[in-house]
Length: 106
Image (cartoon, rainbow, N blue to C red):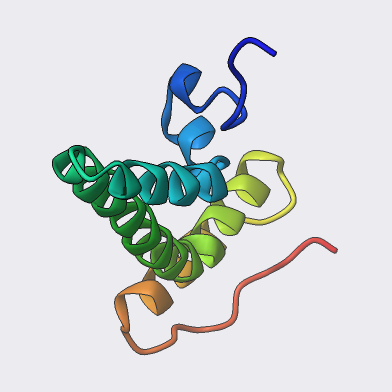
């Protein structure tokens, strides 16, 4: 077989692609470390894995905070909710006190 031992990790071209190859990155880091003379590349591969994990946690936290705002804008732009719902979602996002109830189209 020609190549592909790490599911063509070498052809990863963007963050989404490299993120889907975490197992392969772990295997590559171990392989590089095992070579004995590639400790620097092994270390940097391990650092990349750590960065991906950190990014995932940070991104998930921000997504949770923003979901209600995104929904309010999307539903307003689809004419399901009024602009007041956007303002309400933003106030909640910012930790501001709730405002008066707004109309909602089911």
